[in-house]
Amino acid sequence: MKIAHTLPLMILLAAVSVTASPDPESRSSVIEGAERLIEYELEHSGAWDVVAHLADMIGPRPSGSPNAAEAVRWTTETLESWGLEVRNEPVIVPRWVRGREEGWLTSHRDQQIILTALGGSVATDEEGLEASVVEVRSLEEVDELGEAVRGKIVLYNLPMDMELVEQGRAFEAYSKVAGLRGSGASRAARHGAVAMLIRSLTSASLRSVHTGALRYTEGDPKIPAAAVSPEDADLIHRLLQRGNDVTMKLVLTPRKLPDVESANVVAELRGRELPEEIVLIGGHLDSWDLGTGAIDNGAGVAGTMEALRAMVELGLRPRRTVRLVLFANEEMGLRGARAYFANHEDSLDRHFATLESDAGATEPTGFATTLPAERIAALGEYLQPLERLGAANFTTARLVGADTSPLSVAGVPGFGLRPNSRHYFDYHHSAADTLDKIDPEELKQNAAAIAALTWILAEMPVDTLRAPEE
Ligand SMILES: [Zn+2]
Image (cartoon, rainbow, N blue to C red; front, side, top):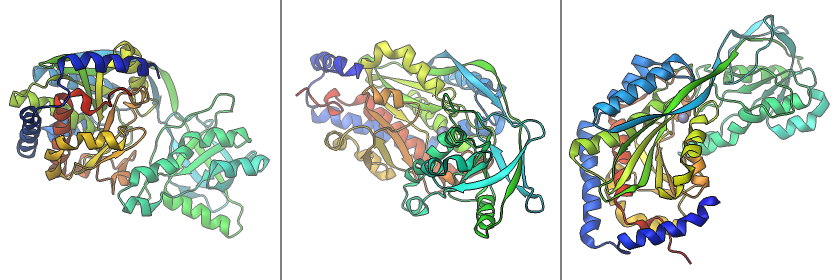
């Protein structure tokens, strides 16, 4: 809300230096630069080298880990070697490490249940806990059961909507179930449950488990929480359907260690005409601990770093400053995003737009944007270069990415790359998020779309994004 007062001023100031409607010559120079970047990326993209180093040479980069620190060091050094101005902005991040994670059905011949702790979960004691399992499909159902879950393990068993996934709307399908993972433990604990399980949030499974952060709410007891494989959730469902009492032994021994100082990596290519105006691009540098963070989010880091490298390489200096931010700790609570917002609150009115990449490494299908439809239409004439990539489809969304969400909420126009999402959640937050899941050709197209839109945003006239005051 704060920014609402400062925006008109910015538009007023900008109006002095920028013509209201661009002459055809400047329009063609915007498009020409974007086309050159696309050509370059499709031929010579370096995005693969970056994601390969992050995933294979550094590996898992959970918040606060030595690997996460190495990723900060290596990306800083790499960006400097490209001739960019780079700084590390300190961020205090949580450190949580996985321990033993085992479950078995004591009521059914000690059958093993494949599971993994949710990020931030508290531990059981060393011997674990044993209780009967209650199955639900929603938070409301837990409230309805109320006292009936006391002393029990609550299993949230709601599959992702595969129809949406098949339609290319996997992120919508994910957002319909992600709340269970975030809030399910506290909601069950409120009614006396002793542990929480959730069916892994995934669009495919070979008995795979998918972690992710939970949020304990203040005032509710903290109970251990884990994701079980879809097959194991189905097994428990079938046993309960038979009218069996299902009891389970659960051992989880993760530990919360003291907070660690990490950093947002911030690199800039100074603008040639409007250096004070910032187009912020980036994504998160941390990953989950189970896989090697190739698609989430080595690819987003690689694609946005590559946009800067390509501009330097081609000698394309944008009108506005392009600021790359590799955010610390997205996965365990957005500390990097919050620190960036707090550090730069004074200059929000100079943030022209944001472009976040945190949705995978596949070929682009377009971008989500916080702009309303009529503003997208105004942008339309500049988006033609994206057409050959299949990336010219822009749709309005309230938020377009986690790390830029504080800026979006404050009114900075936001853009989020939308790669083909069909298989994204097959691997997301699991041990299968590894480099082999990335097709180098698709990654080139992905990086080309990021580079081109970055250029377009950094070049375009100011009134394209922001409506004149009414
Ligand atoms: Zn991510």
